[in-house]
Length: 80
Image (cartoon, rainbow, N blue to C red; front, side, top):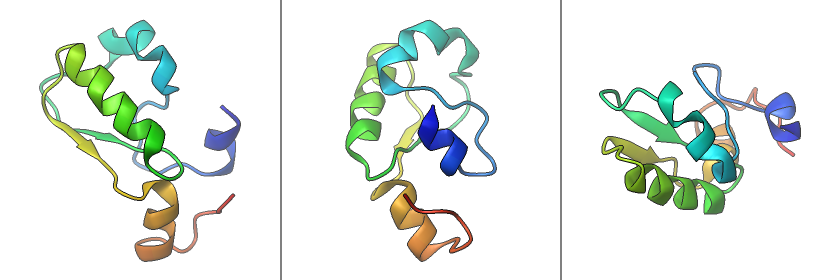
C-alpha cells in the first residue's frame, strides 16, 4: 500500500499485494490482458504464477518492475 502512494502506473485498474490476489480475483477480468508489476520484478513474478493458478491466462510480467518503466519509459514517475 505504501508503494502505491509513491509510484504507480497511471493506467492501473487495480493495485493489490501479491499475497492477497485470492481476495480480489473476482475483480480481475480474465478475458483481458493483465499486466503485473512491482518495484523490481520479484513479487510480480510470484503474482503471475498465482494468477495462472487462479485461472488467468493473459498475464504479462513487467520485467524490471516499475523502476525499469520509470527509467526507460516515463522518467516523471517517482522512484523509491
